[in-house]
Length: 299
Image (cartoon, one colour):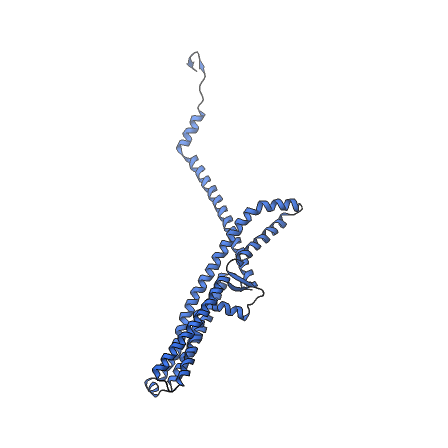
C-alpha cells in the first residue's frame, strides 16, 4: 500500500507525468517517422536534407510533445493532489462538527444501553463513527469506488478518456485522415486538389463525429465521477485520519504554548510589580501606626 508521505505523492505525480509524456511522444513520433519515411521516396527531399536533419524531423515533434504534455500533466496532477488534500481537510472539519453535534446524544445512548462500556470502548466507537464519516466524504467527492486493489482495463481507459479527450482525438483523427487521403490517392481520375478537398470534407466529418463522441463520454464521466479502487478510497480515509491527528496535535501544542506564555508573562509582571518604587511606598504607608494620645498630647 502506498505511503502517505509528501515524498511518495511527489513520486506518484512525477511517474504519472512521465507516462503521459511518453504516450504523447509516441503519438507524435509515429506520424513524424512515417512522414519522413514517405518523404525519402522523393529525390528532391533526399538531396536537400542530410541524416541529421532527417533525424531531427523524426525526434523533435516527439520531444516537443513529451515536454509539453508532461509539463501540462504535472501541473494538472499537482492541482489534483492539492484539491484532494484540501478536500481531506474540509471533510475532517465537517466530520468533527458532526461528531460534536451528536456527541452528547451518543453519550446518553451509550450510558443507557451499555452501562458497562469503558472509556476505551467509547473511544473505539467514536473513531469508528469518524471513519464512517470520512468514507462518506470520499464517496461524495465525485468518485466511484471499485472493489479490489487494481482497476480493470475499461476503468483505466475511462479515467484516461476523461482526463485526455483531445489526446485520444489526435491519436484517432490523424490516422483516419491519412487513411482517407491514401484512399483518395488511389483514385487516379481525381486531381491532387480534388483529392485534398475530398480528404478535408470527409476528414472533417469524421473528426467532428469523434469529437462529439469523446466529449459526450467525458461529460458523462465528469457528472458520475472517475473510478478509484477500494485501496485508494481507504488510503484517502487514512489520510483524513492522519490530518485529524495532526490538527489535534497542533491544537494541543498551541494550547500548551499559550498556557506557558501566559505563565511566563504573569511571572514577569509580578517581578516588575515587586521591583517598582511605588510598591515600596505603598507598603510603608500600610505599616504606619497611630501613636496613643494622653491628655491631648502625644506621648
